[in-house]
Image (cartoon, rainbow, N blue to C red; front, side, top):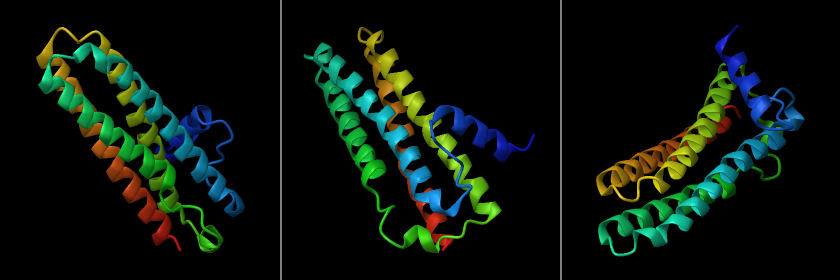
Length: 164
């Protein structure tokens, strides 16, 4: 089984309604579905972080790191939700070749995978509140994954633009 087919099958099971950019008229819809799924996972992660932030009161270093992580989450969520991706005529001109399709499917899968890993790390934070060093490592790991999502979104958007 080819690698891109595995990505496509995984995405189709994770995102209801996703069609894998198979039909030109559905490009906008598939792009929206991927972005909504990633944003939803990241918003859940942000809420999870905000619920545990009060437990760090008194530890200024951890509070500062949590706040930076929360701000980075908000920035990435905004980028995912509001990046230019649906203006009139854009997708009408897009012709995605098989090479770009493979890359886009891989990016989509990695975006969802990284967002899910962030959510898992957020859940682990709850049990790490008594260990400051572990807490800082997990927050740093979350920030690194957020940077990766930021980079993936930018690279993915370039593929759509290259395909024009």
